[in-house]
Image (cartoon, rainbow, N blue to C red; front, side, top):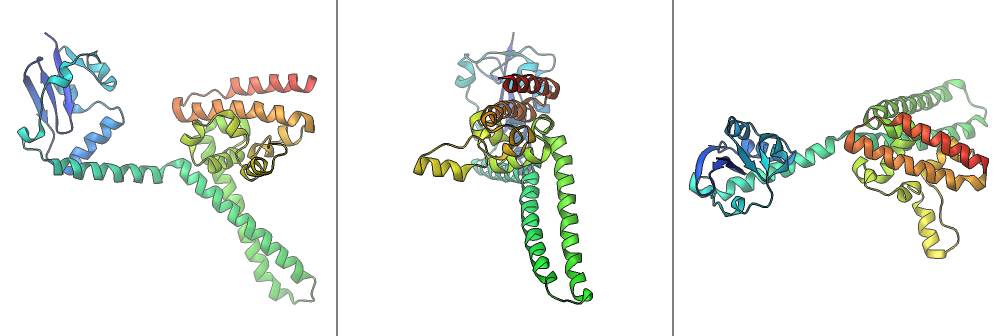
Length: 296
């Protein structure tokens, strides 16, 4: 006879429909409870669940447990069986503390996520470029005066150091983007892709955006001006930096921007959700569509 496999925050239980037949309780430790809650959140199967389901025909109502038994989501038995934590010596304070620890872990993981690291590098790159421009402008003004070489040389070294760091950051962004978002990097280029991520606020946010929003990322000021004053809406934002768009005749830029935005939308979804390599098919589609646009 099939048994019901039910997992609570404090343990895993096998039930025959009316009473509990077996159970494995979790350790009464905040970190251990948090670890199991985190694994469940990530759709992982717990060792305790595998142990109870071993050599037993089980019914389950969680999709993450499908490898262990038969999935039934409309059996009221799962709700009717009363399994209370206090009957096993588990307190609500323990769940509260474990939940707080889990929330902190989520925050830490988010702060360490690779796309946020890329965003910080993009922001740092912008700061360095602005600094380099200001220093170069200052040096140009200085060079107009008769000045001893030994007075200017330290300043020139500073500019060289800033430019070297700009190049290092660009190289690192490209390297990280080719690993983090290979499909997006192949379509629009790793540096432009990284800038799109920075404007969107991360891979997940960008993956959930429609292509029309991706198309005008970075053109927020122009969009606001259009909504306030009227006129023509912006046709492109950051993606305008791509040579296939900014190098195209003016009448074709809108169509090409829409094309790239659509393919970027598909690419970033693959990068974030499925991790599938679809670079070749996306590039093929872009090449064919560009030829059609240019013929017209």
